[in-house]
Length: 442
Ligand SMILES: Cc1ncc(COP(=O)(O)O)c(C=O)c1O
Image 1 (cartoon, rainbow, N blue to C red):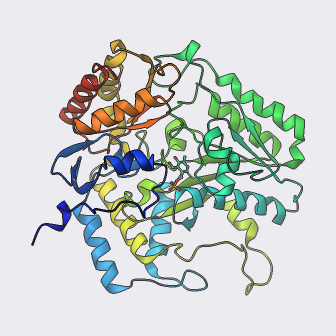
Image 2 (image 1 turned 90 degrees about the vertical axis):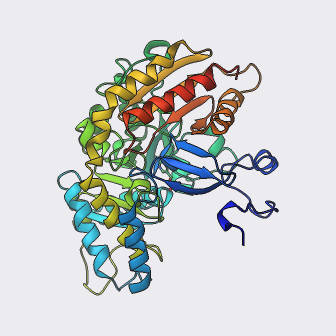
């Protein structure tokens, strides 16, 4: 019998793939059969260095024994427990572990199954919070241009990526957007936080004045915007947002779906930048990407505001069949153990200077118009091919894959976010391969 892992299905038609050029893919499929630590193996037996931690989620590297074992054990012990009006110990244990890891005062966690669900949950908590506090006139949500907050209707509405929005009608009403912070003419090739653009936070003040603070419920931003092509927050920007929100009684939501669990060199971007939001959305690295799970952290006063009324009544009409699923909880606990045992929540900080040096050494490659970085996140922006936007980066993605390197592209930007276990030698391999790709007439 042949090894099942090496068998590629012969009919690819039925699966309508997400965020994929389906026709292109199905003509020349790219399939992974297995993975271990920093490498994938393709169905045709080639090793591919993971430069993106899967989709920004496999922070501890692939097929880590403790996580795999925890899932196996949990599946044989308690496979599912209803999430509503019933519980199981691991979901509570995990919430306590997460609260201990979170910024001070964020001791309550609401479980979801993805980043998108975390975002929609956070937006609903924000709206409902103002209502239970007697401020139901606060219904507006403020996002930011180029923001990515997943693909559910709430996240799409506050998100600011035009191609993700334009097909879907009116989306949520009562939403406004701040300007993005990408200023390449002033900040190109900045290492770390850009000097220019901190004052763009004042646009929030303008928007709040326009609508009146009494109508604004929450502001949501990615502390470091990932999916739009890595936009590092300018110096002072996040603190200014915090100050404006505090001044007007508006909740500040950090979408930490990418930045959570060590990506920047601290458990959360909130810790890294020293700015604490009121609500924090996470997913991805929570279970090392292995099992779908998300967690929304809220400040105690937000949680406590709901704990009112008759005790037999449900306080917040929201939740998912799989909120705090036993297998996901077991996977998350084992993931946190792995992060803690291996110091992965701070390792990006140790590697960041080396990663930065190697990344910026690509400045002399053809078509490179900007490079930016923070922690173990990097981006290389390419000059688009005239009349064919996105094609140059996609060409680079295909060439890199052929050469044994996984990168991620969005528009004409290459984004890098390797697993936090990456070694210096593997950083060298990553950038050697990428240099060859960029020099190769893409
Ligand atoms: C900041 C942010 N929010 C939300 C999401 C959506 O997460 P998911 O794909 O798990 O729904 C993502 C995914 O990349 C993200 O980067």
